[in-house]
Amino acid sequence: MSLSLAALADLAEEEGLGAVELFAPRVKFRSVGHSDLDACLDWFAELVMTVDIDDVGGVVVGSLDFTVIRLGTADPIALCLDQFDGDHEMLAGLFDGNQLAEQVEEQFETLTVVTEAVLIPNIAFVTEPLRGHDLGLWLVAETIHRMLPTGMVLTWPYPADCTGSAPAFDTDPDADSAHIATLDSAIGRLADHFGRCGLTPVESAPWALGMSTAFEALPVARSRLGAVRSTTVSLTLEQLRAASEPPAPDE
Image 1 (spheres, helix red, strand yellow):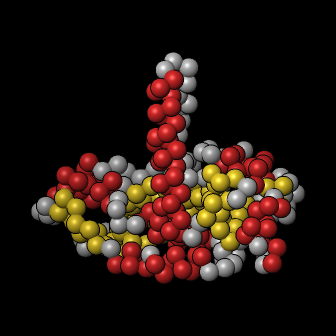
Image 2 (cartoon, rainbow, N blue to C red):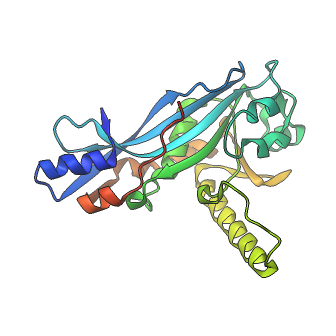
């Protein structure tokens, strides 16, 4: 059984350890099942790392919630997207009824290969002391590889800490401009970051990213991220206790 970061810190303290070594990242999946529509299935991936302490199965250090939508069913894609929290609805314009929009099909050449489903990553999270090791990118790439053998990936790279209620835009124009510039910069950095997973801008909606798994972009990205499997990080008990716990699936 996997432990939380706080529980690992307590166990390590009981064992007389001042620090814990985390290594061998892996991904565990579970179906969340919020949707009642046949076309939709929402999933939750946990990023787990091994700990060299007896009887500890690992510690959860990150997560990704994502949705898989089957194309060509009786369910309109816009209705599927509207069911979920986050920014899924921003992608509705990339679909036409229960299929991909024509301009998306043309850009990613999905008409030339079997494209039965679309995977939409939502919020990827890695706890603070483990950031900077490409674990989040690796989590996204491994999720796409394992959960979408042939299909399309679409996402909107929006900073997780900017979600929630919209700021007031009618008080200080200078402050509003600064906020927009900061947000645009953050979105740009995220888009570049997730480009390393093989995702590229959608020409008809440059704020969105896409990729067909039928071609070489994903295998190339996974090859370049292969060294992440060998990641080893030592964290003190203080770092473990101060770290944010990954989000849990809403059940």
